[in-house]
View 1 (cartoon, rainbow, N blue to C red):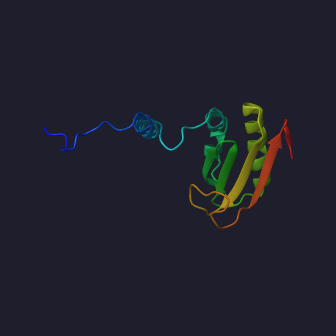
View 2: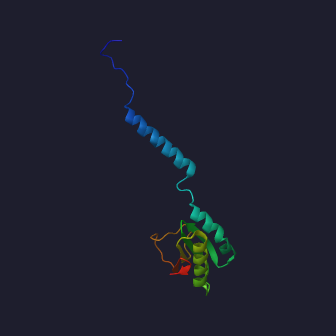
View 3: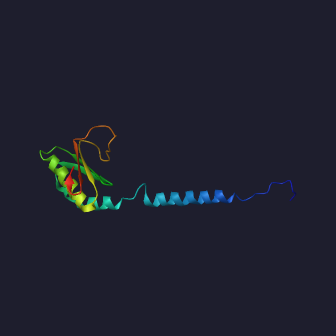
Length: 129
């Protein structure tokens, strides 16, 4: 081999480190998914399972310390349902809990998705705000 021929050189060390970090991060994302449920979410889901027994509720969902309840038909005591969920959630996780009532929205609705919501209730320190 002559001196004029191209010799392959290894990539710089910093590039190797960045590549490895990217690969490790990507593998972690693939294993854990977009976001693993927080401890608050797990506790709230466990505490609010009773919502499954309310026939007026089509679905409910927990996102961190926010709870979304979608009603098929709006019961006359819908605000009490929200208050009860907020107080029970607050007591269970020891953190402010926000419950939003929806009507006829698709599962996965979040504020800013368009459409409105029926109402919202928050509980902190064992009291409705």
